[in-house]
Length: 146
Image 1 (cartoon, rainbow, N blue to C red):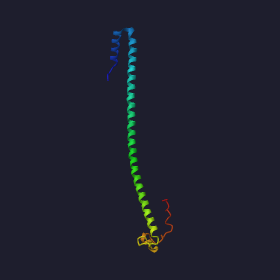
Image 2 (spheres, one colour):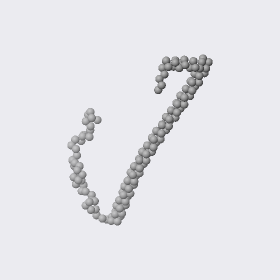
Image 3 (tube, rainbow, N blue to C red):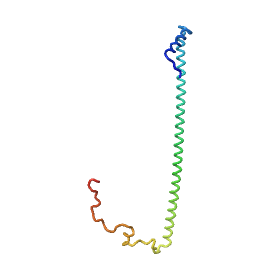
Image 4 (cartoon, rainbow, N blue to C red):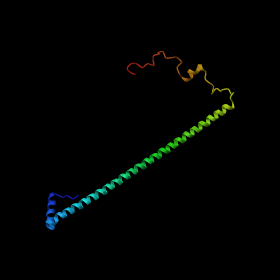
């Protein structure tokens, strides 16, 4: 940038006074001030316009990214929906097959695979203890921990 010190400004004022004279110097100073204001306001408007364009471009970029994320989420949702539909179709087909088999042979004896377990053997098969807990108040929470 141009460095203008007080000494340089004083020298310019003396030269302008000598060249223009005392009658024309105030008019020239007003004209120079008006031109300087117009130049600054023009520069400020150009800078503001560039900043607005940059903001608009930033918003457009963010909108494109959001649209891409939405499309990716929609594609993932479509894949999940297709898997759910396929699973539901298979479950419906299996239910229809079971219903068809049940209607075809209603008097069939249950096989060893489908027979109900012996109730006496049920605790052994499930791995659950057969005896009740020895302390009936074991469901209570000890003091200071509840």
